[in-house]
Image (cartoon, rainbow, N blue to C red; front, side, top):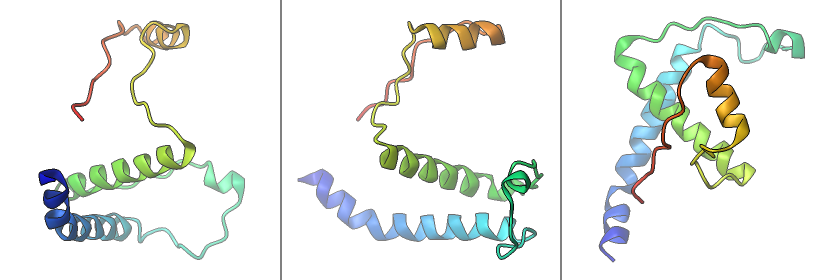
Length: 107
């Protein structure tokens, strides 16, 4: 009950912050024409975006929100990697990084 009441009380503030963050990211991307036709080849060309120091948190929160939306739509609900899996071991091995224990969220 307390959790639901807290979520209800803070929902408007959270949505306001998300809107502010999204507008900050969008303003950073204004140099790219949103109406320009982009081919598949054009979309694969790397482009540099300079993120102002005071906009970093907005970018990180927005990218995290986008990642969560994509994961939800793809049906990905478990964010813990298979530490013992051969692909996990292979990727970390190729990079020369010893595998570490997965982060466990408190939820």
